[in-house]
Length: 135
Image (spheres, rainbow, N blue to C red):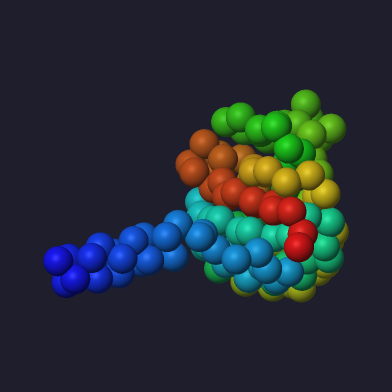
């Protein structure tokens, strides 16, 4: 009985640890390739200054655009999406890299990140910025 209880508690501990998700960070390191953000999920603390380090390994110009909470660029970014942009770093040339800072949104939630280069959203160049309450 003790072995079964020990096994159960061990498995429960491992399960709970894996459900914790990634910890919030004030640094985002991302590589842009044609049609992908790697990684494609970022977790940051609300209202904190975030350092974004970007490397464009793609063959074309890419962008890192954070949409406002509850908005989406749909299948293609156009002029109607401009008012829904929370923050953006645009026109990162092929082979280019940069390091910039921005202030994370103050409202926790999942924010869509897109590249506005034609055809990239439809091809899956989308990421998620998860903002969590600061502790």
